[in-house]
Image (cartoon, rainbow, N blue to C red; front, side, top):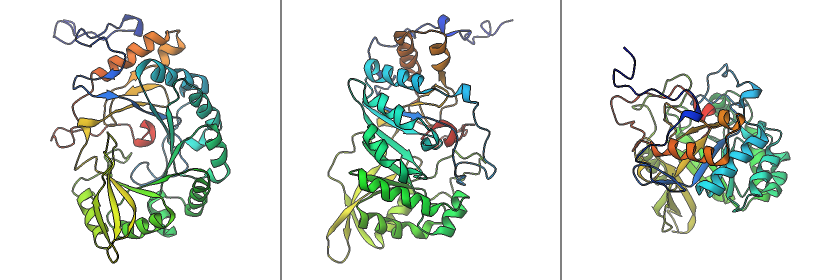
Length: 360
């Protein structure tokens, strides 16, 4: 008896055998069955990182992909070009691992900036080494930059990142502030480690004109030690910040952004100090308005951070697939996107791949 006899469809043995879903509409964009359209592409450039953050990687690190399995500069340009020209992508964010570990990062950015139409280009980084590269990346075409920074205390930084590199990160942030109009800071709060640093970190960012975004810790750690009951929630973050600042709704529409933003005012004078964002992926999910599609460092399409499957584009590309075939394969991958990540479902299973392997 075969799998087909049991009602399990046979998977195509090659991308050449793949057929389009009968119910998928003939539309150029990356639409799914719930009517969402992906216009925001996250591209992981490498799975390597020079930190070992406790909520992402084990202390000893993870095996790195072999060089030949990682997309080259030309392959990245080709696939991003398909996304922008043929699939309606308008925003491209480069991530890792740590994207600054790619020596050809500026060239990759320049390739994407040369596309027509030109997408908005952003970069998420830990800023280690950014002090010597910020100007070159801005000249190449990076429009916005996000830096991960969980604390301003050197000992706490070393405890969370397992590396004593706070000063190097701060030097990178200072360099970014000189060349970019807006620097965003991403922070993850861990109970018993840096929870009481939240208000100080926000004050530091407000003084420098940075926009801080707190991110709920997600189940994407290599140790699979994530515990929802111990996680710091968005509600807790709002409460902590509210002890020192007044937070009010932001009049600007969220427009599919993952962060809910708040206007921050002084509790004493009412003066507007800036804004802060909170990304509540776990407790206040925004899946219904998700507009993201993800390309891993080895050229796989993920329709969600918490997906358990990927659709390979790099293999077909290397075997001679046309742009039209790659675009259709991408559309089919996104057509099957689930309604949500399912973390509230008792049957939820954490993906095997970590954030460093997927790309944020």
